[in-house]
Length: 101
Image (cartoon, rainbow, N blue to C red; front, side):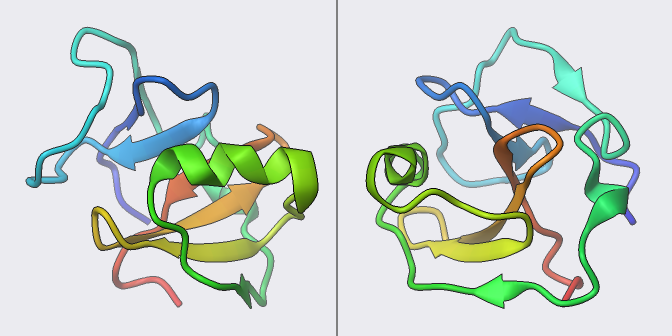
C-alpha cells in the first residue's frame, strides 16, 4: 500500500485521485490531502468487481442515480487513464494503485 496522499476531485463529493498523478486533472489544489487509511483502502475486498469504463470522474458520481455502486466495484476512467474502486465506508471512489489487482 502506498504512503502517498489523495486529493479530492473538484466538482465531486467523493472521488479521490493520488496526489502523484502527473496528468492534467481537476483536483482541489488547496484542499486537504487524505491518507490511504482515512479512505479505508485497507478494507479492499479480496475480489474486486471490474465494470465498464466511465468517461470521467463526474460520471462515477452520476451512477448513484441509476446504478448505485457496491463495495469493491472497479471502474476505469478513460479521461485520465486510471482505475477507481468504490469503498462503501466512505461512499466514494478512490484511484487504485496501478500495482494493485
